Image 1 (tube, rainbow, N blue to C red):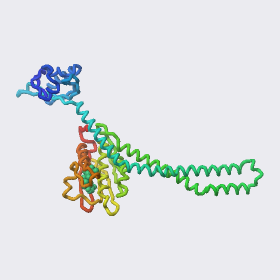
Image 2 (image 1 turned 60 degrees about the horizontal axis):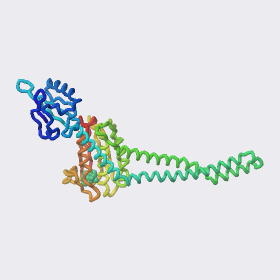
Image 3 (image 1 turned 45 degrees about the horizontal axis):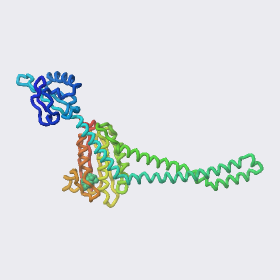
Image 4 (image 1 turned 45 degrees about the vertical axis):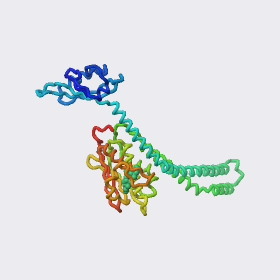
Length: 378
Ligand SMILES: Nc1ncnc2c1ncn2[C@@H]1O[C@H](COP(=O)(O)OP(=O)(O)OP(=O)(O)O)[C@@H](O)[C@H]1O
Ligand SMILES: [Mg+2]
């Protein structure tokens, strides 16, 4: 921060600015990149007429001689009769901000990949099952093809002119015998069945891979409009193996416009809530149920995750959103899931709430502004 006279002579430099730029002359524009000085001077002149701070962007010279982009605000300081007396100049290093933002996005992406890593054994199993029956079916189709080909060759022999001396009864007998050998009735039923099952298997693998791809999608630093119902489906697909032994997942996804968000972060929140619900249902005697619903409520999208698990005791309800609070054993939970969920929701200008009744279940409610948090870049 600097205070300058009206023509731009430096009157005061705060310690941070002194460290950052060193003492480089007595005029403020002596620390600005020569190519930016003219534009800055015009903006500065225009700012005389404005009651509010004027903001411009320019490159500022650091102590080591390098230039960095800064956002600079000029606030006029006037005396009682309205006459301009001084300027307060405040510069913010936008490159540093952008770097910090990039680093944060990278860190969040790493976290997401880590959870995909944790799911990987289950994912491998989910991929392996269809691959196995596609393999079995393909082997069956290869054998069936050979049987059909053998049969075709018998038909061809029966119809060939050189078989002229063999009477028709004998030809029909030979064809019939070959049909029995090939078990043509069985093949007529099983071949279409094997084909459709194989297609279904490849579609299952393809949809799993699509979900993994969309789940590990790398967020940019900017928010973008995204289909949250689709994101919920992807999350359920990638976590299927974590959930399928303990609960049925019921989706009640309503009409939802695209929501402006960081989709990767929200995927992570959905996954945390889903895995928490599955964990809560692990010790239940019968199979549990996890219900995920989505709806709009005015300008907000509302997504609920509810389970019919044991519920959360009242005395710990205050603590569950705290980082590292967990009731799970060592190696099972780190207590970061809900803390991260809350941070992500707040960053989106949204909220996360919880209702829980002992013995009945727990519901987490996510609320997100459909058009995103205004002016949010992270
Ligand atoms: N659906 C739920 N039913 C019952 N208890 C829950 C539920 N969701 C969360 N909890 C409680 O809240 C605690 C904190 O959850 P959080 O997701 O933050 O951490 P964690 O699941 O223990 O560990 P991590 O998510 O890091 O693997 C859990 O340990 C559990 O006691
Ligand atoms: Mg958790």
